[in-house]
Amino acid sequence: MKKNLWRFILLVVLLGLGFWGLKIGDQSYRMQQAGHPVSFFRAKNKVPIHKPQGNTFRPQKIVVKSPLLTQQTRQFKRLLSPIVGKNRFVGTLLIVKNGKPVYNQGYGYANYQQKALNTANSEYQILSMQKSMTAMLIMQQVQAGNLRLTDHLAEFYPAITGASQITIRSMLNMQTGLRIKQLSKQVLSSQGVADYAARHVQFVATENNRWSYQPINYTLLAGILQKITGQTYYHIFTHHIITPLNLHNTGFVMQADQALRLSTPYLNQPITDNSINYLHAYHELAASQHNELATGNVYMSTGDFYKVTQAILQARFLTAQNTAILHEASGIRQYGGGLYSKSPTSYWSHGVGYGEESGVMISRDGQNAIVMLSNYHLKKSALKKQCAQIYQNLMQGMY
Image (cartoon, rainbow, N blue to C red; front, top):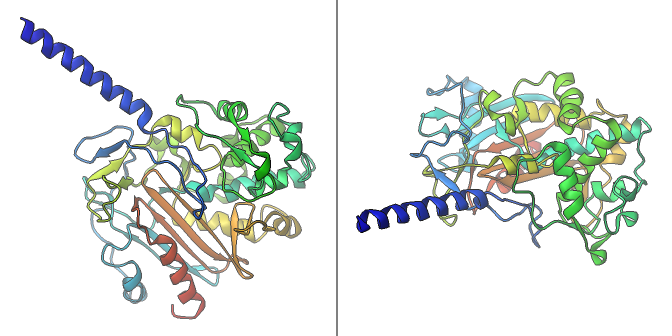
């Protein structure tokens, strides 16, 4: 009798520890780290693929056979093989030349358990590359006369310390001194996420007007959008971006059940393992998905992402003058309006988190681009270097 009682007590303790670990495991909040523009404390809750997890992204439309390739595509694939072939990349790679997609191919598995392959239409969480879209939505309000870049944060959130010293322009360019240590552990609405950020944000006066990658700036910008329009960020994004561009492979990760081709993310355990083995799918908790308001909770295909970025750069959402003003870069990273100025002729952007990684290199006229979306993030990732190398080869006429 006593033996059975002790077994019962042990079982209760183990279940309690498991639940506690699940609650805290995915509190993934982004923190600036010197030398790396996009970094954060990663969650410790990685779900092995042999343990089905209902909330883990899984593609509904499954492709298990590689499509027949045209002669041109086969030639491209051979040229790209030294850079992304032989398990060097998992995801989808899009190459655009003179405004036309010339290569859009999937690599590796969208879901290893289902033997589902990544394809040209696979969907991925684009992470920090969403910020350029949020920045454009803010600039639309400036263009409409509802907001000025010189307006101060205090006009919308007067209770935030230092808000009278922070402008909309400095928020767009990450030069505010704003920090946040931990995001909500509960699922919040878009208004709730912005309000939580306003209550918990900290102001480091010595860092004001100095560049530091802090997504909290864009969370608060989403809150400002909502205050100005009286609409949720998701409504604004849908009606100003998804609907006008007729995007079919775009949505919000909180509604992953509506996605047809959303690839399963993978993150090795331990993180120091840099092999591609598909042993651990990554489970992003709902609270984290909502916390990424305006900063990284949109999923897209490579084609949809390029379509939006091209439209932004080609002044389809704003006037040419306001598009140029939006992307005026500053700070040590030359960051402006969600994009980094790579050179006088190109921009780049990058995102990483929750087992996924994203990168883009694009000419300032939007005519030439490399878009890489991956559902397998490695600690020693080469994606940024791969993206830059392929773009350089493209501009040198190698493709």
